[in-house]
Length: 198
Length: 198
Image (cartoon, rainbow over all chains, first blue to last red):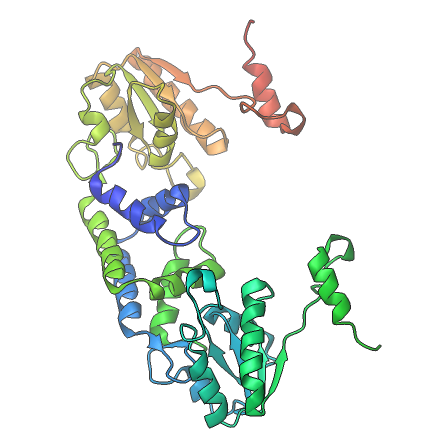
């Protein structure tokens, strides 16, 4: 025991965060102890406040403080276009391109029978209802290009198509600026499948 | 504005921590929002409590909740041996070896005229007083092997030697398991300087 209980406690608390190992937890702890009192109070308040205020947007399941999230409240958005993503951060990646003018639906996960995550856990019935009620014309599926993401994409496509909506999935292939030499087989296979006329 | 103010606020707060960039801050924020209410409360409490309770050990300047830190309270420690380190985490690295049986003095920095950090800021007068009062026989300097750490080591050595104490510095050279081929010139120079009879 080199350190006192309240220090060890803070290290433990930091370690619960994703991607924070023992060394980083210690570094963060020591940093916090050098911060001003008010700053630490502010940090603690920000944690509790965010957790207290934030809930899911009733429409798209984005994180928000209000009934509807800022994206769903934005009247300039194309109401007929809906992009389905796994996580809020995926939405951010798409927003950064500035190319997508529609709205989103956030699954907060992907289908995973092993982990007991089925369509109900991902609120897919709610998604299908939204597609019907809001007269969506195109659903762009942007789940991850892996087993769970693929399964989720196929499931949603199968359930949404009978509603008369166009269902697309974002393209896969070589990343821009990437080098053919270093592409793995699966990416290369997808790139070949996604080839277009020039 | 994709997110609500309290989310943005929490992202900002995480970004203040060292080594936490915008992406990690966002990831941590989303994670916190999926945590249980009580867990977030507990995290907030751990922050405030640690900051409130922790102060410097009056003897060695380690972080502690008490007048003296656990290391200084440990009567089995060699009272004549004192290791000087820059940061509490440096102390931990040395403790992990299980080879050092003395006590420590933590400078919380290194001499840096540019940043206005002189001997007084590092409590070096207090260190010298400790060496005198506690009849220290050997001071092992374990500041970092860089410009500031070297300057600090030389300053302390110069001030401590007249007190009749033996002053040593930890060895420098090739890391164990390291490869000669990848050693930089400075490390190699130090390794040559530190050569020993076989």
